[in-house]
Length: 399
Image (cartoon, rainbow, N blue to C red):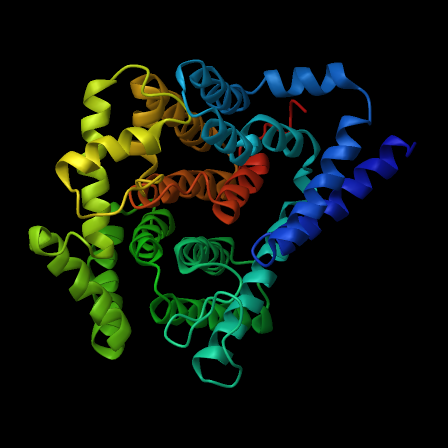
C-alpha cells in the first residue's frame, strides 16, 4: 500500500487530471473517478474520514438530499426509474464526500488551471468548426459548435469559466503582462463564443455572473457597481443581438413563444412551460412528499393526457425545482435548497477573497440555470458542481 504522503500526491495528480478531463470526456473523467474512489475506499483511516465529512453541514446536507431520494423509493411504483435516478445522483452520496476529504488548499490553482485549459481547448475547436476549418464532430453542428457536450451543458459551464478568468484579471491581479494578455484574449474569445453557441440558460447566467463580478470588483462602491452593470450588460447584449443572427433568432423566438404560448406549445420554450404547468398539477396533488423517486414520468403522462394530449410525455420537466417538488414534495425542495444555503453561508463567512467571491457565484449560477433544466442530474454540470464545491466550501484549517 502507498504511504500517506505518496497517496496524497497521487490524489492530487488524479484531481488535476479530473479537472482537465471533466469538460472534455465522460469516459476519461469516469475512469479517474473510479481510480480515486477505489484508492479512497481501500486506503483506511475511516474514522478520520467520517469525522471530517460529518463536521461539514454542507456534506450532511448533500448526503441527506441523496438519502431522501432513497426514502422516496418506498412510495415509488416504477422501481427501475427510481434506481436510474439514484444512479445518476450518486455523486451527492459518495463522490462529493470523497473529493472533500482529499482536496488540498495549495493545489486549488492547479485544479482551476486544468479546468480552464480544457475550456480553452473546447473554445478553440468550437471556433474551428464555426469557421468551417474542421467538420462538425460529436455534438457539434455548424450553427451550434459545441463538440464535447451539448449546448445545454456547455454554455453554463462556459459562463462559469468566463467568470473565473475575469475574476483573475479584475480582482486577483497577480498576472504578468503576457499572462494578462492571454487571459484577456481568452475572456473575449469565450464571451464571443457564448453567443455563437445555442445554450440560452448559459447566455442568461453569463449576464448574471457579470453583474455579480462587477459588484465584487467594486464592493466598496455599490452605486458605481450598479451603474457599470447597467451600462455594460445592455451594451454586450445588444452588440451580440445585432451582430449575430443566430443569437437574435434565439432571443426573438424565446420572447415570442412566451408571449404567444398558446400558439407555440410545441416549441422548445413552449414545451418547458407546458411541462411546468402540468407538473404543478402533480405537485398540488402530492405537496409534502411527492410521488416518489421514480414515478414522475408515469404521473406526468396521466396529466398530459388530460391537459395537453397533443404534446409529448416527458421524464424531465427541464426544471430542477419542479422535478424535486414532484418527486419528493416540499421536503425535497427544502433539502435541495439547504445545499445552496450552506454554500452561500460559507462564502459569506470566509475571510479568503477568492473563496468568498467564487463560493457565492457558483451556487447563484446553479440556482439560476436550474429554472431551465435539471442541471444536478446531468453528467458534466453535476460533476463540475461537485468538484468545485469540494474545495470551495472546505474548512482547511480544521482538516
